[in-house]
Image (cartoon, rainbow, N blue to C red; front, top):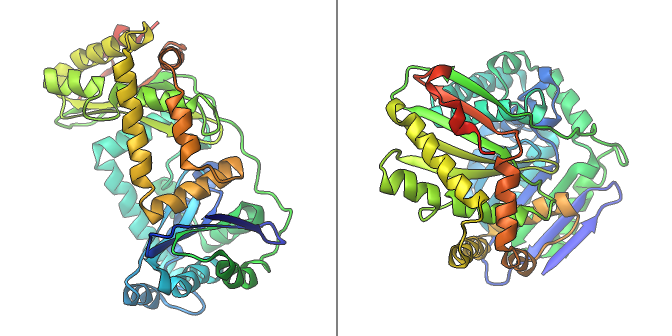
Length: 420
C-alpha cells in the first residue's frame, strides 16, 4: 500500500508497504546531480556523496560503518546526472537504526577538511580507473559528444582539474543552492509503517529551512550529432553510435524501450545474434537507453578488432535499416514486450528496486505509478510505433559516433554512419 505525505516545508515522504517482504529499503533523495553543476563545480554532487559517509557531529567514519554492520545492513549512495541518493536496506525491525544513520549523514556531515583531502585522492583514483577502462571511458566520451557543451554531457565524477579545485566552501555553497526542501524526498519500501516513518522523520526534516526556495532552473539539452575519434593503443576498437530518444516523461518512451530490446537489449536481440553469434565479430555488443527528464539517448556499443571495424558498422547499419523499413514481425514484437514485462515484475520482488522506482516516479510525475499501468503501456506498443521510433532515432540527421582505440578518422567508412 502506497502513502504520501508532504511536510510543511515541502519535503516529501513516501512509502510502500509490501506485506510479504521482511526487509525495508530506505532512501534519502535529492533531485540534483551533475547536470545542475556549473563547470567549476563539476563533480561536486559526487564529492558530497562520498564525504557524507566520512563523519558527522555524532559519528566518525568508523562508527558509521560499524553500526551498519552490527544490524546486518547494506548501505550505499549514488550520484547520477539528475539525482543523488543515500540509501540502505535492513530487516524491518532495524528501520529506526537505519533511519537514524542515514538522517545523520544527510543532515550532520562535517565535511572535515582532513577527510576531504583524503577522499579527493580516492575520487581522482576513481576518475583514473575510468580512463583505464575502455568501455566506461568511451561511454563518457560519447555522452560528452552527444550533448556538446551541456552539463548533462559532463562526467558525473567531474574531471581531474575540477575535483582538484573543489573545497569545503564549494560543497557547502552547492548544498545551500541545490539541497532545497522541494527537491528532497524520503522513500521507503518493504516492511515499513508510514505513520511510524512520519513520526521519525518529521521532527528531523521539517525544520530544514528554505521552503519555497528553488534549485536553479535546468536548461534542456540539444543533440547536434557529430563524430569523434580518440586514439589509444588498445587491442580493440570501442565504438558508440546513437541518436535522440524520448525523455523520461514522453509517452513514446515505451515504444523506444521495445525498440531497444529488439535491437540489442538481450541475447536474442538482432545485434547480438548478427554481430556476435553469426559472425563472431565482437564479444560485447548491445544497445542502451539513457533517459532524463527532458532528453534521451538510444545508443549502440561494440568492441571489435580494428580490422573488423567497418564490417561491424556495416552489420549494425543493415539491422537498423531493416527496422526503419518496417521489417518487424508480430512474434518478435511480442517477445520483446514479454522480455521487458518479465524484467518489471522480477524487479518488483526487490525492496530496493521498488523504493528507487517509486522515488523516480515521484520526481518525474509527482505520483505513484503502479506496475499494471506500466505493463499496460508496454502491451499497447504497436509495430508501427516501433518502426517510427527507429526512423526518428537513426534517420533524423543527428547521429553521433565516437571511437576509442588504435584508429584514425580515415579508418571509419563514414558512409556506414549514414542511415537516411
